[in-house]
Length: 110
Length: 209
Image 1 (cartoon, rainbow over the protein chains, first blue to last red):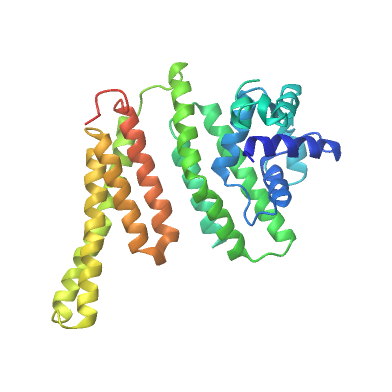
Image 2 (cartoon, rainbow over the protein chains, first blue to last red):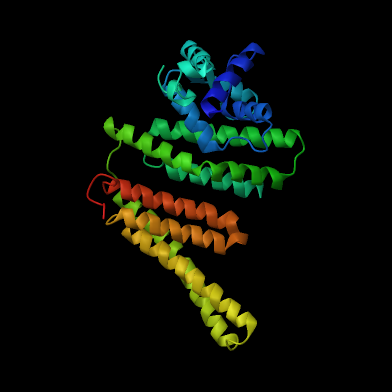
């Protein structure tokens, strides 16, 4: 399954579990658990995919309030949210094979 | 081990984001910093061994190098289109290239030293001396490929980059027990050569052989 699809699916699943936004490491950990993988997604692969999804309009992001990070004694997180366009793209990626191209190709255009 | 892995990942991130617009550069570096912190924090919470976490972090860094390089190429290209990248600090670029050449010289020198050592310490019938000589010659060959590739990157990238890649891969395989150093350093040298080739107009422009 393309990483972009996994990110959107996991992002929506996290939202249903009460986490509306996610950061890079969190999504990597969730994907690893979902896929029962040995390693977390590589930095380059993960952040390139997040960047691509954001540029396509399927994700939006904002940096968290520096005070929250400072209070918890950690670096600021960049928080991503799946957009409505991202949800639609994900639904389309699950459509029957005859009516679609590859998931990656479809995810490339909102 | 953990600190080495974190340091190498940060250095690699600093290397491939160099020259990008400040916001793009700062965003990627901050994101990787945050990721590294989260992974270390979780490992510490789960009481995992530092060496294991370090290997995991290094693995994530190394496995993502190809994506980092292609992301860098795209980010650099969009920034150029928006006129955000200024041609600047040629001295720094020359210094970086100089460091890459010095890195390429190292295997050449170490290989020569091994061959010399084999010549001094015994005849070719001596098994250890023969092994040392073979080791030295192959290391020198890998170094020669790396240097030749580096020197050809601007004039003839289509030849230079594969020659350089062959040298780096050969060195990584031949020095497999030192992969933790050889692979990231080789990747950085390849990255430097790639950016030089791009700056020289490759793949469309003047540089093609």
